[in-house]
Length: 216
Ligand code: HEM
Image 1 (cartoon, rainbow, N blue to C red):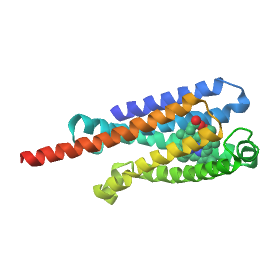
Image 2 (image 1 turned 135 degrees about the horizontal axis):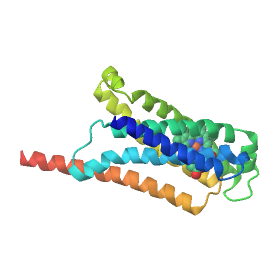
Image 3 (image 1 turned 180 degrees about the vertical axis):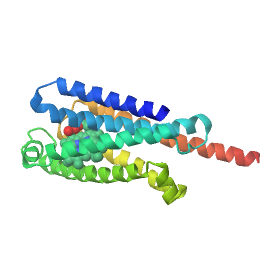
Image 4 (image 1 turned 180 degrees about the horizontal axis):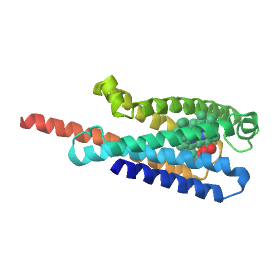
């Protein structure tokens, strides 16, 4: 029941954000706005998912076992990320986009760097999509039973890789599309908070293990 309520809440939140995006500009730009909203929502949900474990580790010094809230948030992050993947593919994998943001762009950086940012940004986008499909296929009790908890945990760690690639991909397109400083700052903040608390969580777990070993 609690899980159902959580899924309904995230579905409602997603619908509201998309509805706001739909009415906040001309119909011709609706796909662009959906692409941006889905990209950010995916990133925020992914960061939130990855913060649950470190928050617990910082509080108690113990790592977190398989938790449904983390799994549910991860599922939504991956699904919304894949929606962005489909939209962004349609919007930016074409010569009009490449001409506008790469070959004929009037703002810095230079065309060579823009070309690298576009290519690597797109390649990372595809890798993230594959990682999301993998993570989605892992997000059930059946998957744990089939592959065993050790392998499940190992593969589950690819969520950190997906996050890191999403951030790099996000930065590449922030530069290409000359996004405002506020959005770039937000991306920096999400990255620092997520990776910083992960590192802090590891330190806390190690300290806790050393102190329980020395007491034993
Ligand atoms: C599941 C895979 C993907 C994820 C999680 C993802 C995530 C993101 C994030 C977080 C941003 C920054 C948001 C912003 O625009 O301010 C972004 C932007 C962007 N991404 Fe992706 N991306 C993915 C796949 C792709 C692919 C395959 C392409 C195609 C080349 C792409 C093209 C773009 C473009 C053009 C932007 C800038 C404008 C926009 O948001 O539409 N993305 N993406």
